[in-house]
Image (cartoon, rainbow, N blue to C red; front, side):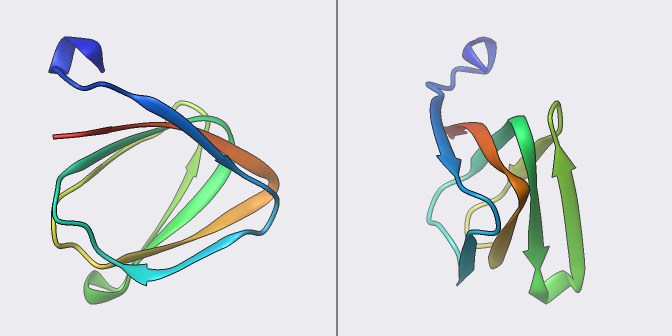
Length: 80
């Protein structure tokens, strides 16, 4: 992430935590380090099931929600 000019920070959630649909005014890069999380992209009618090692590039303004998996999740996130 540093090679891309990002300053990553870690965040985590417990099992089955949820984020309701929202968007951000900036681009996000998310790496799943441990556990799993499913991101919903309602406008695209897609669900992205992510596990350790997966990356999500989320452009500014994209509506999304999330459901953490049964083991919780630890992610690294940086903004562009």
